Image 1 (cartoon, rainbow, N blue to C red):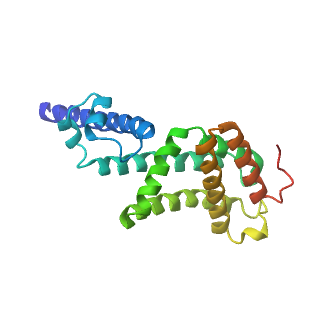
Image 2 (image 1 turned 135 degrees about the horizontal axis):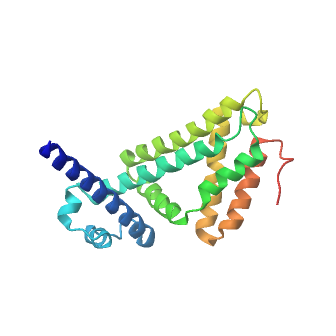
Image 3 (image 1 turned 30 degrees about the vertical axis):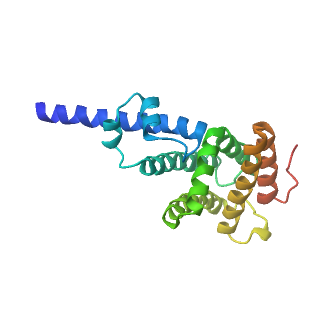
Length: 208
C-alpha cells in the first residue's frame, strides 16, 4: 500500500508539473511567438528545471504540439457545448451568440494558433495535426446541425451539413485574421455573429 501511495503521489506531481509547464508555455508563446522561445524561458516561467522539462517532453516542438492539442480540444468541447443548449429546434441566433463568445474571448490563443498554422504550412506532419483538429471542430458543428435538421431549415446554398460546417469554420478564420490585426474583439464578435447568422439562416435575422 505504501508503494501504491508513493506511486500515486509521484503521478499526481508529474501531472501537475506537466500542466504547469503547458500553462507557462502558453503565456510565453503568446507573448513572444513560437520559434523565439527557448526551453530555458519556459522552465523559468514555470519555475522548474530543465530536468523537469525533459521528464515530460522530449523537445520544445513536442510541448508546443501538446499545448495546441490541449487548447484545441477544449475549444471544440466548448463549441459543442454551446450548440447543445437548445433542443432539436435550433435557435440559430442564440446559438451563434454563444459560439462567438467561446471563440473570440482569448486573443492569446489566436496568436498561438496562428503560429501553429504557419509552422504547419512548412511541415506536412504538423499540418496533419492541424487538419485533425479542424476536422474535430467541424465535426462538432456538423453533428449539432445534423441533429437539428428537420426542425431547423438551413439555406440550400450551403449544400450538405458538412458544407455548412466548413462555411462556419471559414467565417471564423476570416474574422480572426482581422482581429489579430486590429485587436477589436467586440467588433469581431459582432461581425462573426452577423456572418454566421447569415450563413445559417436566410440572413433576415442579422443584427448590427
